[in-house]
Image (cartoon, rainbow, N blue to C red; front, top):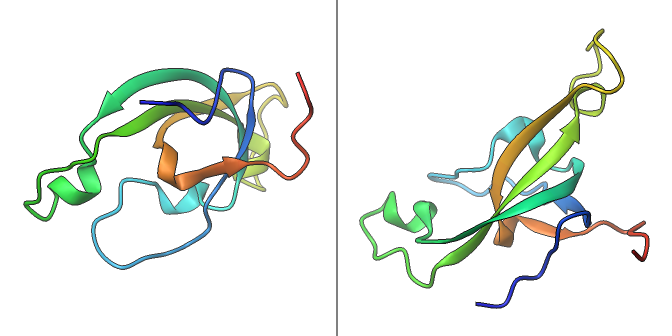
Length: 100
């Protein structure tokens, strides 16, 4: 399966709020992060949650976010990050993506 993203790509998480079982944390929707790595291809848990086959499989990525950008009241170091595993269908290239 072709991957849309590579390590180092700047991505934005969809800000949508569809009904039902979703594996993307609400607090990370609409935020921008950096692809840390590809984790492989897996059955879609959002479909599995409803008893469907989970097909087609989806690419899963580990995305790194600066904690200060996620939580406005965060008082830790500006270098502190959090990594979240997100499926490709929740991600788009960030508008200010810089060519590598």
